Image 1: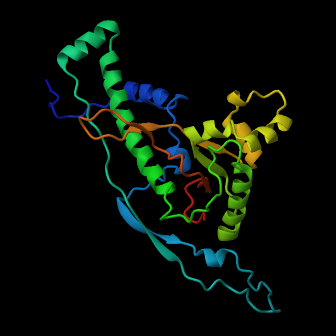
Image 2: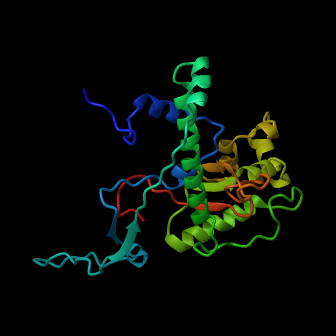
Image 3: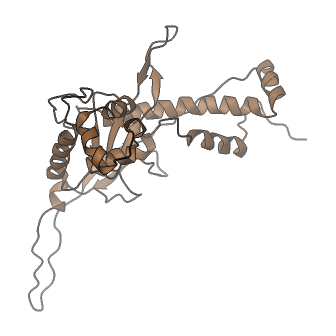
Length: 265
């Protein structure tokens, strides 16, 4: 009779389904994979072709002389590099802990441990993505005069319009999403410029009930992504200090990849 070794991982599709239902819950606040969708690859690391921005917007000579050939592109790809690393988390489950949970419902202990481990993985992933996107060293930041938590003087509609024009002049495209933190979203509900815009567009709207879709309409962007995830920024053994993963010091206009096409800008 075969016996499973103590170190052998056992696939539990039922737990995977339970985790996905938990992850997709509206209160989690994770937007990382909406901002940076997964690109599947069979290689741990490799280079990939990158079309130079300077080549995309040129107006080439497309004329063809009689009996002649069509002119061809003569530019060369640049090269990008990706490197993957394995991520994971193990949650210990004591026999007594399992017994207590399973007395309430069979399988509850496994579900709670799985959900706990998955939450650690997702939180770490969200922090990695947020640190890359909300990074003034990587992306040039447009300075604003009044921060958006100043309800009377802030002009977020003007700031986003300026940002959209800057985005377009930089890459020739328009952004398809605005990323903000949850605290910024709450500040915008009380901002005079936002209130004055939406009270005519949605005359019956209670501002505290404003959704991200209604805010996107005000800003003139397809989507507003609100990052609501938090983490404990204090060290181990220190009283918790709950902080936003997506900083309220930044807002980002982004162009999100729509598929697995390497030639997308």
